Length: 226
Ligand code: DC
Image 1 (cartoon, rainbow, N blue to C red):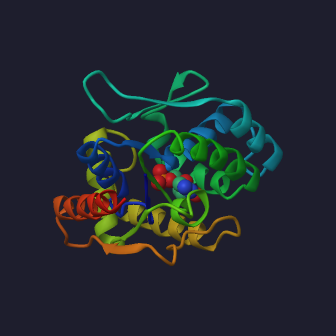
Image 2: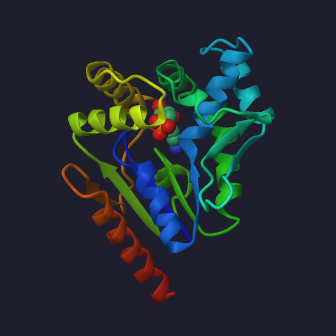
């Protein structure tokens, strides 16, 4: 079974996807981390962010892996070409670099193929922007998560403080978040939009725990009906 969770950055997708996966005993895939890893590798290799061929080559040739720390069922560590980039892909520089990379068709084709292969191997909660619309249009449960810009910026600042990476300046984070939403929603390749059959969640002012329980209930209902 695939649970697709899409929505803009800071809507709570990552936290919720990981918690839902843990509760249901599913695996979990953060597709945004894959686009970030390709962007990181492009900067390392001095490939220009408008060089579609160069970016596509990176996405096709470098292996992206996820690993869990011992005793943790959720794979939170990210590697590209064998190099760990878990923290390196969360900086403000990477927030900016990833937009043009994720808008590049050849990159999307390569990563979507990998995402389908991974997801088809078992029960997965997969989070991203186009999971319910493009990657797994037949997913049995599709969630589209939103929250107000202000709440998303506050959450992202708190997350950056906890992780010790990224900007901790609210105004900077808010401006960057709005810039990325705009970019992700208006790009030609797989723009951010809810699938027609997605369940919409506005998480502004909601307790994350409440959302997790509701998604698990919906998933268990579907599993029971099978
Ligand atoms: O979720 P995130 O902020 O880590 O995603 C990083 C970037 O990748 C973001 O600009 C949107 C893009 N992305 C995408 O285009 N498609 C996905 N399935 C996941 C992320």
